[in-house]
Image (cartoon, rainbow, N blue to C red):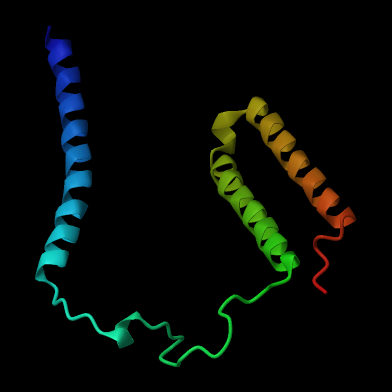
Length: 124
């Protein structure tokens, strides 16, 4: 019976945090709407870029290679997030973790070779 009370207490704490996580932003937004001044003006509804009236379409087309290059950077940056804790705890993990990490790195190298062959890493 004691164990049941402990679990119910844990669920109560999670429920309280969930309620606070939903309630606090809703209350803050509602109070902001009540307290801010409401003075509509036509100038407030116009668009601007850094204080300057827009003189052309705001959409600018970028080369897709920039996005792919950035995505490749993020992928290999996340690799270090996985490699660092493994390297720190290498002595405790043993041979099984070494094989797992080698498989992980080989898969990333295969992806890098594929991207290289497709000329994704070519900047210009």
